[in-house]
Length: 254
Image (cartoon, rainbow, N blue to C red; front, side, top):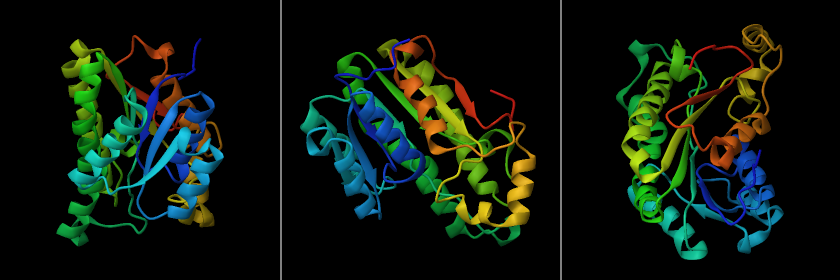
């Protein structure tokens, strides 16, 4: 099984921390050249890029993927610096920490969630696909969530955004197949990241979350990054439109 990405160029959104950073590291180890976006974590982004080979191998780009111009600039950076684009990982996303009942959910809450988690995926795919069509191939991996499959009470706008991502992947997989562009989804469960840390530090909520996982442990960012690398590699050359669940058995559906 060949999991190398030698001579390939990848773009990873939300790459400065958590799952995104683990993906950047693993792609660099697999010999890809990587351009990744960050929004606020400039120091972490610079340190990550330096640890992954510096500007000749790994480039951080400040970008807000909600903005079409920023998404375009991110993709163009990869094309201008490295000459091509083989893999896109649409990872950037947000989640609401405090439980939010639907009757208290404001239009701003809803719009922000959809702008980052759904429009932010559309924006980078929109700008990446023309380059992949010209190259007659590519890989798009979108990060969803268990919440996109089963829903999530008090986080319903998050679940809706991640469910929308899954539907987008299903449609694009058939639309882009004639161009040899494979589109798949990775759906993590509870992963120990900065985003989940406030919940997992709460003893009651940690016990509750852990009780829902048959494997009896929380995932690590590297667990998800490994699935992303598989989907990006030649080992997954006959797979498109699929959801790869990385959740310790907590949601058993595709």
